[in-house]
Image 1 (spheres, helix red, strand yellow):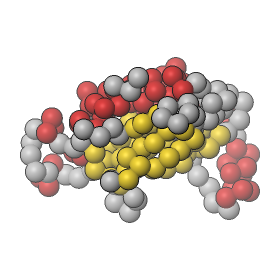
Image 2 (tube, rainbow, N blue to C red):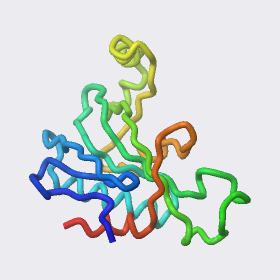
Image 3 (cartoon, rainbow, N blue to C red):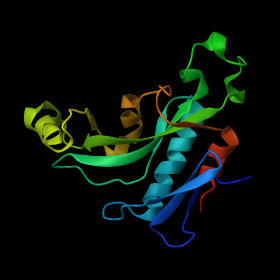
Image 4 (cartoon, rainbow, N blue to C red):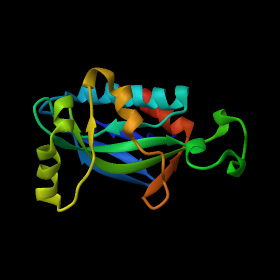
Length: 173
């Protein structure tokens, strides 16, 4: 079996995720989280997706957003049954269904008051010339952050992954 995520091969700050047949490298932002904290978050996200059959995400570049807004990279993990009506699925048993993974960037804050400030959205607009949502993320309860994430795969790059792929994440040392 081929691992879905590899980390610590060259150094502690470079990780790789398998998208289709290829691995994509990404740098872990180690300013606020350690390598071990990323791995723990990935393991918990994989378990959450498999056990609850709900969308979760692998956070790849966490930056503390206690007093501001930050842009982070995530790979959303989406159960196959969330992507289309049940009548279009090949089977009724969710245990035999796969998952999809998508790549995205989201704006986060750990200060709920930032969500109410027009200036927060104007800051994003001033840089990107477009408005984007800001998601509340509490690092101690990341499962609630997952509720913001989309389960749509049409119109975005997505890759099919299996339950075995997700299980490989739970075995990262």
